[in-house]
Structures are given as C-alpha cells and as structure tokens.
Image 1 (cartoon, helix red, strand yellow):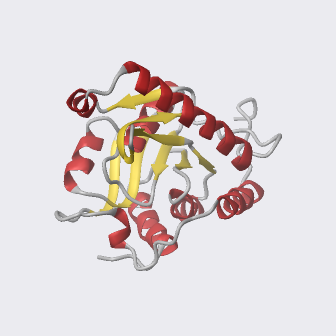
Image 2: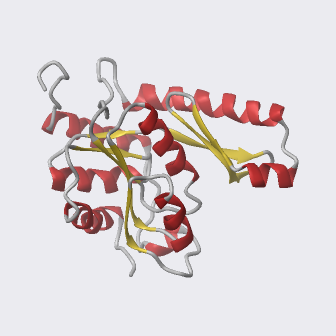
Length: 222
C-alpha cells in the first residue's frame, strides 16, 4: 500500500480510527507532517484539532538520529541504550534540550496566535496523529505529555509504521491505530507518492480553519 499524499492517507486513517469509536476525542497532530493527516481525522470525527509540539533530540553531530524527544511541558523521553553506546554526556543532553526548547517556543508562537488557547485533553481520548511512525521517539514523548496532562486515554494513530515500532507503542499507549505495517519499512516517505515538506504557513492555515469550524466548549460549560 502506498498513499497518494498526506490528505489521502488521513482519509484512510480516519476510517480506521472512526471504526473504533473513540470516546470524546480530540486530535493532537505532530507538526508538521502530521497536521494535514490529523485534519482529516478531526473532520471525520467532528472533533477539535490542535498540535502537540514535540521536537526530536538529535545525537551530537548526527541530528537526524534521535537520542530522545522533548514535548511541551518539558516532558523528555530518552533512548538510554543509544546514549550509553555513543557515550553521550549529560552536558550534551542538556544542550540538545535547551536548543529544542527554544524551537518549541518559536513554534508555539507561530501555531497558536495570541489568544488561541491549547485544546484541553483532560478527561478525553487524545489521538496523537503523525504521517508515519519510524522510531516512534516523538510519539512516545507525546504519549507521556498527554498522560501527564490528564487525558483519559491516549491513542497513537498513523497511516504507516513498522511492526516493531507499532508493538513498542502498544506498550505505552492505550491503543495504536496504524493502517499499514510493512515488514520492510525503510522510511516514512517511501510510502507516499507525494511527500513534499509541509511548511509552517500550511500548518497555520489548517489550524486556523479548525479553530473556525469547531470551538470546543469550556470546562465550565461541559
């Protein structure tokens, strides 16, 4: 199975998630690529869409290789086995966290204009959506962050991911919904005909449309 683009993948994922009837759902997409996918899921379920900001913590000198991840609220997840194998120091960890925390703050300012509050996951089924799972480091940090914030359940949802990562997610998430789990995975982009980069402007536009079409009730009203 190969998806035409993130929107078509989101439609497939939306059908799979809807079939499992999540209770009082809210979609928390991982930017940037997870946002158009998550938008399709939120549209299908008629629920709020927001971003959950998570940054990969790259190995010094090899930023594409994740030694962990940092989520909003200061939640960190570390690959201790990799860190020990590479001899990464506490100081190097701290530098990576400081750098990515600054990026999280910039993203929050861009994606949540002044006066736009985060969607509150407390007591709800939080659906963490990405365009694919590779190592799953960012999704793991997202799960920890949402459990800390009081979500009733946390589901990890993606169009595609390798079986071992999907199994690992099942150990920490309440449910994992993945449409396609190829044994020979490679990279997420290999499973899309169109995998162009999603820019900040596209993310901002999707989130603005979501805010306009659906304003969740306040906790006082619910």
